[in-house]
Image (cartoon, rainbow, N blue to C red; front, side, top):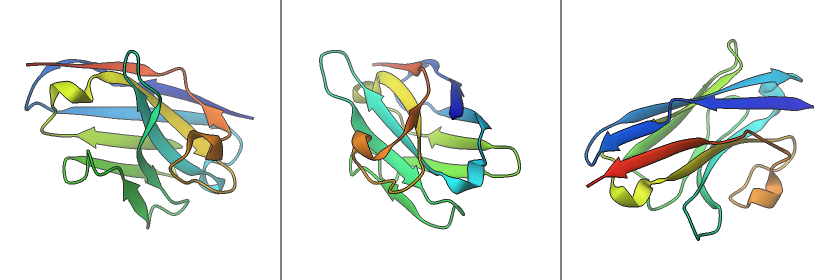
Length: 123
C-alpha cells in the first residue's frame, strides 16, 4: 500500500503560479512511476504529467506543456508539480497517483491515488 497526500492548492489569478506537492508513505517511493491528473466539474479525469522512477523521463499533456513541470525527490518521498502561467481552464481538483508497473496517460495505469487538492484560477 502507498498513501499519497497532496498539498499546495489554492486560489490564484490568471498568469500566476502554484506548486503542488504530494507526499508518499508506505512502500518504497522510488519503485513507482508518479503522475498528476486533474478533474474539472462535469468533466472526466485527465492526465497532466508523469515522471519515471528515477526522474529522468517526464511526460506532459499538450495543454500544460511549457507551463507545468513535474519533478520528484526520492529521498523525501515527494513529487511536485510546478504550475506557471496558470489559466482559468486549469481550474480543477488535482490528484497525485502512483503506478507500480506502467505509468502511462490513462488513470487505469495507476494503482494508488491521493484525495486531491483544489486549484482555482480566476480570470
